[in-house]
Length: 97
Image (cartoon, rainbow, N blue to C red; front, top):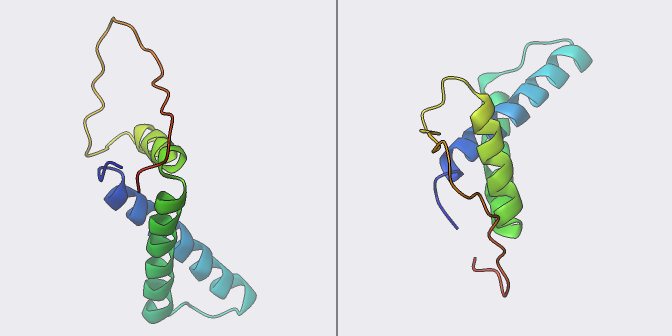
């Protein structure tokens, strides 16, 4: 498994879960979320992405790279060559965790 999507995936998961937690606190309990609860939700989201990366490495790596391609100011370089064959590589066998 490549470690390239690990950190961006953790950040994306942490931001999504912490935003959902803060929104639910604000709208359901009608009070402002605390820094402690937002930080806790960020850590939970990051850990959830790490577990999903361990269980579904190819699928989640593809999904994270797709999400990063949608972000216009991405820190990763997504330069592709203009021509050439683009064949899908099929991996057969036991997954390497």
